Length: 247
Image (cartoon, rainbow, N blue to C red; front, side, top):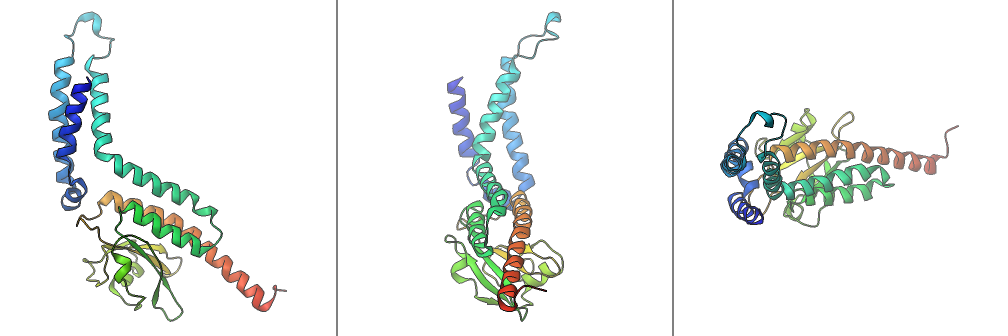
């Protein structure tokens, strides 16, 4: 049993090297290949461990079922462990977002969480200012995007245009944006686009998979609600201090 697990671990670890890169290039093809490898590794083992069927065995579970489950759990853990851990980290951050008391603190934590989730791709927060331009506010400490991301963006920068038009995610290459990142994701758009996060490119050249992009979109949407609420509260406090309480 232990020997089989070590053999499977070695095979799978070697076989899925570059998994994220392969998923980015061809997610359906990569998944199909993984399923084929799973059938090749698991199913023959199952056939060898199954007992011959007898009439009095009809209510007994097949002998190979527990073993098959253990092998599948092992393979899934080896392949998806990093992804599961990063997704759990992002989910924890999103759940804790309501505990922040300042929008700037939440924004700083947000770009850090996005950078961790994307395995160090880097993240930069852009916020709309009075004249419609977008100003860079917070950047992640790791990754390449924040080192070259411009301080100010024109209101009609292609990624901003795509997000303002209704997209939740805009891939920079697809919208012909010159921004140094892979994609832009809406953070806040109550009436018009108020803020978005520019996500950099991974150093290994891999691109974010569709499931990773979906997770980012969902979590940024929920965090954006909290961020916008904190901004409104800060504006209300500023007005009270400037003009006094409303009569």
